[in-house]
Image: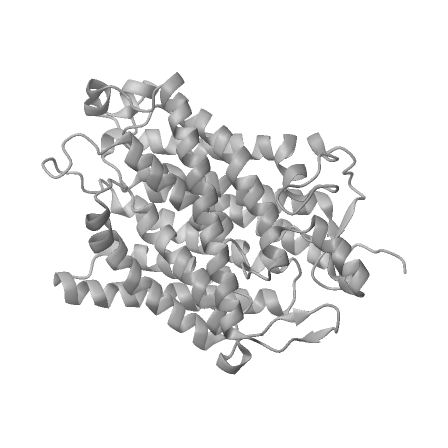
Length: 439
């Protein structure tokens, strides 16, 4: 059968790729920037912008091939596409449907945007005190040994036609990702993106230590208007993040987009009313944070759950992550500056595990498609619960070990933290010689 490019699907994923880039720059940069003190605003913008750029360059050089290249194993891809060798404007790759193809360059861009925002997410945990040079070296190491293997383990597979027979399926499993082979559901990055980045951030915040004056000096967000703009761009860009993960402009993409809206909206309301009850006043920061919590919660299962599941996941995310940035943060006693773990970590863990329940057709989910029988398979909730838990455990341990080693190496040879004088002055002037505002 002739292999033909699906121009509609290709255009759709190109658009979704642009939306994911918008999430990072300027979305995440503004979201984070408004939450730090004014003397560190510019430093956060520089960090997010530079890290996204660094990650995408590394992705083109070796990231893509070791995540999705041929000739690898269950934990890492092959080296046949270093510097994107062999990928031309005519190269096509399979999507999730038989005989539907998009340009491989399109897929490179889409997945590269994911890699960029994942690396950039980490900086929120230790904003206002890390050396810029140390951060870049850490990202280089972490991207290479944590992001790439996790992306391969979860998303690398041999395509829909590789499972037609038992023999071909056995061959496909040798080169498909470890967690994919186990049946882990991660539609758009609960483990690969959110848990992976949040664990790295948490460990970094612990090793680097608390900000000077924490608990005694005012450290409130300096510009919530900017944070609201950034958060809104995150929500908008998340449509590309989740809907684009269907790899086709089909009903699954539409379902993922609808669930993304519903979960974010429900997360907003869940956080708002819980905070209103808990603190006596509903805040703008709470509204924005609730939306992000709902977005994180739905990401692992956006294309697998029904509307009811999205509503419940969004509500749980809003309430649970409110506790995550208050109660859990106090219990951990780690200065996670912008609550990366409280939202992305906790939300990613809960979202990944709860996907096992809400993907069940009995609860409105889509179930799991069996490519060998070409129909929806019988759903085993308890088995899927274990598989989802396994994926969470692997993500925590993998990122945790890589992050700890990377931070320790960087601390030994470069030093992680700016001096106390530089920290008090603010990283805008002390590191970059600029100020975000005219004084």
